[in-house]
Picture 1 (cartoon, chains in turn green, cyan):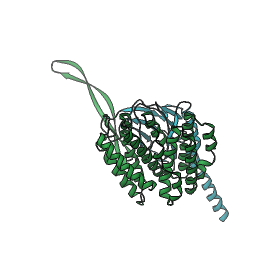
Picture 2 (cartoon, one colour):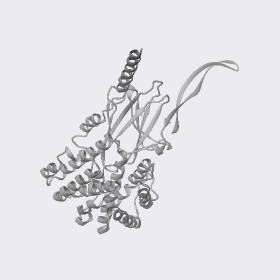
Picture 3 (spheres, helix red, strand yellow):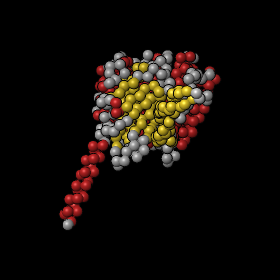
Picture 4 (cartoon, one colour):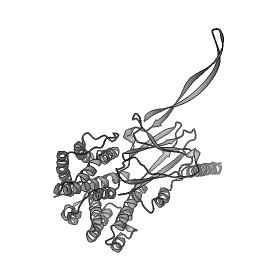
Length: 277
Length: 154
């Protein structure tokens, strides 16, 4: 716990009659009395980190010019390869990111396929309630071609997921799922940028430094058993590309072309490690 | 004699449970649902967070770091119906130990009857939400503040 001292300054006006040499003169003496009050503030290690939805990040990238390249997403055929809970959580995030990418590019059938894959993984993770009550497939089919409505449906799915994790005390699972989604979204954006360099997209990729910082801190907070040590090391490796970023600085931070290239290479390696060859 | 002891135990348990439920009115799903209504029609759900508190003898505070991306619109919503004591919500541009941090928004529970608060940041960098809670000698006073944010791209 970190103690923060709040200084409450009170101006006390004391009036004294001072007698100057040779005559009566009223002098007002202002005395500042400082009352100190200690407030217990949790240290930054215990800070709560808000992670944005993968959909928001994908939408930011889309508005910066992220185009659709079909074979970048992960194959749904690999879903049965993910046997450990850890792999299932990470790849749930990967597929959620793929679904968002397809929804934003009007690939409705692909989106429905990814939704079916997410349902399968949610059953393996005992999170069936997340998908069960929403009639997602029907809603997706009813809104084919309406990108705006489809993104609202995706946002509803995120909210259901957050509610489920909150109600079941599984906040740490949210960080791992988000890690999978974040790596996949960054990978897709870096690959699209490799195909055609886009300064707006590079600017949006650079902004993600703050998210990565929070993601690493959030996973560390929930890793008392060193279960996620390898993932933390991998994410810290990615974070090295954002060297020089300061979340409290007023200066804008933009990755150099070389940094974007090396970031893209490392994201590809990490992504392959998560989804498999 | 045994019956008397049993009645005393049951009565004590009833009093304890009654006071607990009085202090903790955190139906977080209902509180969140109330906030999602405030996103309509322009903002999409992005993320949420529930801060559960147990009051202590000393004043206490906790900080939440929120990423804000440039050029986008955000609506930050707070539901304080789950906390029956006084509270303060303060939003800053820098974290609690930074020099020259600027207060962007504040609300004090004792100065309002409302329980839903809305803040739309003009600041396009990370912001920090501080929840400040009073100290109390009373034991077992719990509560929660629900935070939810929405975004609008472009």
